[in-house]
Image (cartoon, rainbow, N blue to C red; front, side):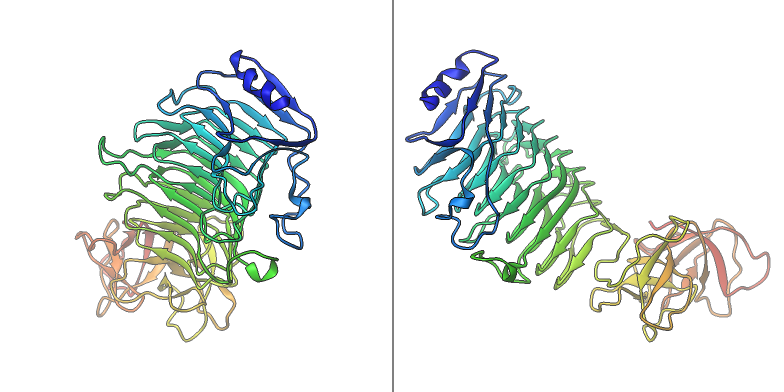
Length: 460
């Protein structure tokens, strides 16, 4: 049989095995490729005929079967690659156009593929089906000093799977996930893509990083993306929890969290992660950044039907293109990267040349900064007269109203701090309190007392 042939295939490097259309049942411990056998290539005739969310239960719906599929009903993985304690630098296999399916009807299997101490795997056009309590692909580094790295994943389909991609304890680095349509388990739980991080205390936990997610579609998971102990991960993702529009999918809208960014305490293992041009729909929280993370950068997110767009306890979290709770945003300033358009309305204290801050309690985006604020966004260029977005200068040199009584003599190079009720404060040569620096005076006023200053925007 082809399964018998597959067990012999890894005995020589350079093996390529074609799986014609059909279902191939593996029992007991599943199919295994041992450690140290690079250049193994499993090729099928097609991963899945799935319509993703067909009428009826995916457990029995034949539309979710793969054209070429490896199936199991046992408490195991359909395929195991590598071995515990092996070299994490071993060249992984290429697996293409094959589906992996749990046919137990009760979510019995652990998952589709178990990679143990494997790097350099290439997975393209795979499907994981009905692993309702398991993982599609589980990358198991096996320890705090081991690696899951250089794995390349393209165009995956997952239907009724608890966690399509799970990366275990270890250093998860330079893994690429490109595209894919991933649908959560009907019995709930799990995460679409889960970098579990490095929880071991001895040796000390260390982070991975530079994992690239390019627009996987994560649908109906309580958590779409979980990053733990990651540095400099560029994330582009589309995530939805609009369960009311799907048949037989657990979840309610809005519920769950679109993305969680977390790490080992101390802010040294969760640094410089970048979430860009991502979409979050019908979650309770769009993005959550914990206090263990530093300099998370969130650029031009799109939120729809989200209760709380951003829950941020991180250190020096940066946002650009849209404030955490703004509506009706135009993302690009005309001809200038120094101007962004945020929503504001009259009656919120916003006036031209005053400091504006994100608002986490109202939906119009920005309002005038409170006294001695530490979260200012930029400087209002006009006074709003309606609910239309107004231009906010976020970089370069801006004119800022001052709160100094009777005005102030401004000297170029003086510190300008966040003052009272949305105005700046001329602080002379004294540094501002932490987080309150607005910028540096770009020009002096000579001996004249002035009520505004030309300021080079530079937050501390």
